[in-house]
Length: 315
Image 1 (tube, helix red, strand yellow):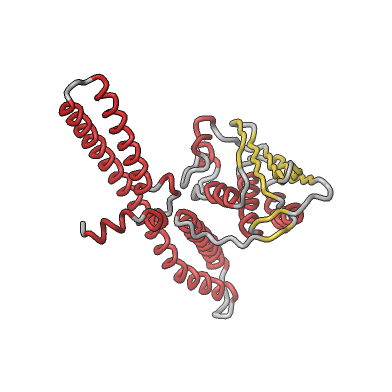
Image 2 (tube, rainbow, N blue to C red; image 1 turned 90 degrees about the vertical axis):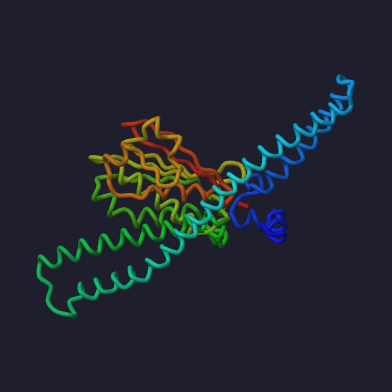
């Protein structure tokens, strides 16, 4: 390691930004804290040693050996953490690059399918239309996955853009429900919506919150089997609005609940009833809500349904 590289390592804030980590998760900052702790330990050891050990040389030797041992352990641990952080950064960059590269061919594929479906290149037979429908559905799924991967990459790198403004959460929810009504009706699911009168507006990124509500509503409809009901409610709580969505679906097994907001995680119960899904939706939803100054949580019982809540600030 050159002198310049060593000095760069000591420049904590750029290093933390590079890895996309908070200060208390950054290896360089943790090394600094551990160095201070080791220094304090050495002083305390010296003071205790001079009190209970008569030979000053022995006290100095004990302090020196203890300091070397602690610094060696600290350096080894921090270097391991640094390698993990670097691997995580490279993984996020890889996902970002691959996702960007996939966007262009997917857009071209989508455009080509739309052109074929239009009939401008010739009459489409029934069997051909069936295959084109399969291609359209799978292209849409791939597009959604690429979009989710890009969002996750931006979240991990701290580059997810937010354009905050004031808007009506109740009105946004009504628009989303109206959009999902055909899907709910086809699944024999009834959606009931209630909101307090004269609710204040929330301050957040409208498009991001829209994606959160769409994800929660889509999941609720998707995991109700044989018909059921979804209850959506918005109430005012102090200086925040509380959004609640409750379904009568398959529920989440108790052993899977602690991992429900992790990337790429899907419970076995969910995969039995719905094979499609990337396991990124709830991770993205949690990141968006927390970035917006709110919280998200849930309760669920297998076979009875799930309830999700989230809060958003009104100021």
